[in-house]
Amino acid sequence: MSKLLLTVDHQFKRTPDGQVWVKTVYGYDFWKRYLEVFDSVRVACRVEDVESIEEKMLIASGDRVEFFPLPQYRGAKEYVLRYADIRRSVKGVADDCSCAIFRIPSPIANLVQNEVLKAGLPWATEIVNDPWDNFSPRVFKSVFRPIYRIHFTHQVKKYARTANGASYVTQFALQERYPSYAKLHGEDDKHFENYYSSIDLKEDYFWREREFNPNKEQFTIVHVNSCVTDFSKGHNVVIKVVKKLRDEGMNVRVLFVGDGPKREYFEKMAEQLGIADYVSFTGLLSGAASVREKLIESDILVFPTLGEGLPRTVIEAMAVGLPCLSTPVNGIPELLEQEDLIEQSNMDGFARRAKMILTDENINKIVGDRNIKKAQQYLNTVINERRTLFYSRLKKLCQTFHRT
Picture (cartoon, rainbow, N blue to C red):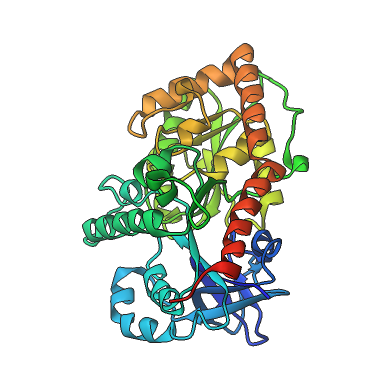
């Protein structure tokens, strides 16, 4: 029996009936990709015991999935204050496991890895974003920022070059900055590399019925970010783009999909700019189908992010034929053409390109068709093949790996 130990840097909630819940991404369906290869999965993550949950949360627990709860903490200060408890809590996390995968960067991965190495288990890493960019001064405002940036960049570099297997959400970008053992020394039976997005994009998600209408009463710009916590995803830029386009006579609005502590700030910003009636938030949506509906109803995605691995948001928008504008960071240039990549600080550039796409039928069609074609490369059938190969190679090591 093969049991995979998986670390996830996310916050989960557990109700008195033992069910585990999560706001986004890591619902039970997420674990199925691992269960296609491994007999069971143990998830090491932060778990908070609660009496009840918020509406629209996803069920994370289910058949063949167990949770190894670690103490709850939020931010660097709480992590430091609870470090001793967290360190004690990981004892035994690797018991009965066959191998491990660390989704990084992650503050808990190092503690769990110590247990994995003691147990002599083969292990792999899934590199899901770039800490050097995500903790840059432009993105992350905190006194701990330099420590975070150095620590997690070192973590990802070290894991990539020492893991048995390294996978990346990008095809090229993250591999250049964080080369794997296989890339540095050559692939062998115990060291391998692959790439795949964490997206689960099915054929029925695609939508090819978008029609150009330059005379619409109102155009909708959409932006998707499930947890609105800071400026890194460019909410402020999009609001300024709406202001500029409206000043130029275009009837546009923005729909922000998501919710979070910074929402009120951005709503007040829109009010101060005199465009509060044209800026709205959906709040937390229940799943991919609800997000898809909002994307289909919109006319263009504007996503001025400062740091990503490979954003699911952009791929999902492309799959429904939506023109997309974003920034030239990390893996995004693997998705969009140069003319649709704009520096976050260039608000005028976003406004100019958005206006061009919304008013020119030829450009609109070219961009929309191109995006659908590109998104086809991220179909779950395509991604799953590479992902399953990666997991299967790790599972094979479980049978041959010599424990030390």
